[in-house]
Image 1 (cartoon, rainbow, N blue to C red):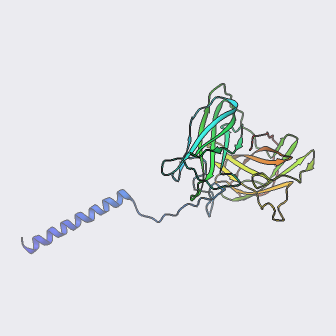
Image 2 (cartoon, one colour; image 1 turned 30 degrees about the vertical axis):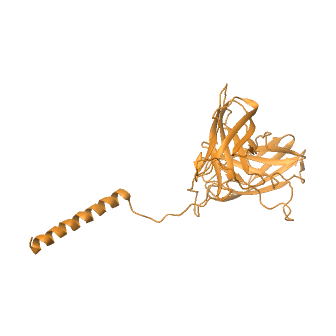
Image 3 (tube, rainbow, N blue to C red; image 1 turned 90 degrees about the vertical axis):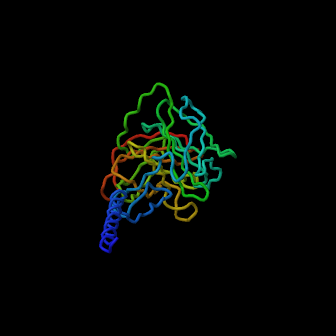
Length: 309
């Protein structure tokens, strides 16, 4: 083969390799640097600018190698219905080691999908990693959230559905409400939610028109707040400003929360507070705007007692 033929063969091979590389580039796409999303302990995820683009909590049954696995995905209605589950780890086995978060190794939130029947309970774990508790279940579709931190891992909130067969009539969608009454207590919510921005919410507790100034600690705080987004039940669990015993955090009447929601939508909020040895639940509904949060008042609504252990 002469020099010209060899050179021509080399050029043809070079063009073939280059063309193949272009084809692969078109299939694979450009390589861009990735940014790991932070996994905050008590928010739905946030971004530096504008509404959050990270995945809200509670929408997945499996995340970061962990799976929320119910022993039975249906249950009969009743006041003390047994619910049994495991948290399956990355190795496929039930997790048996958890860190305490707010004085408990796992928090279980149960809510009927029409936003009625809220319960916040703390199951017991057997040595084999099986968790069990009882719930007050009416007929309908329920959403369960497991909020936990496996030892050596980040905090995770997983969600799964539990069906309760029977006669079922969905509750009407509640109107926006800032005032809740429960067992003679009145709780008023001040502040607004705004997508992608931190909001300051103040929950003020009174009884018979008088401020309650001796709230009792519950799971290491004077109040716990859970928010669920209408539609998909994206989950937000926050805790109040301040620390018990710091000399400045008062036991009422106001409980201050700082929280952030990921989108403009309606949110159903559930406040657990403890007074005279009883934990009660006050409920609210707010619509988050796209603007800057500010204080304000709104229409009044109702509240209800809830099981919280």
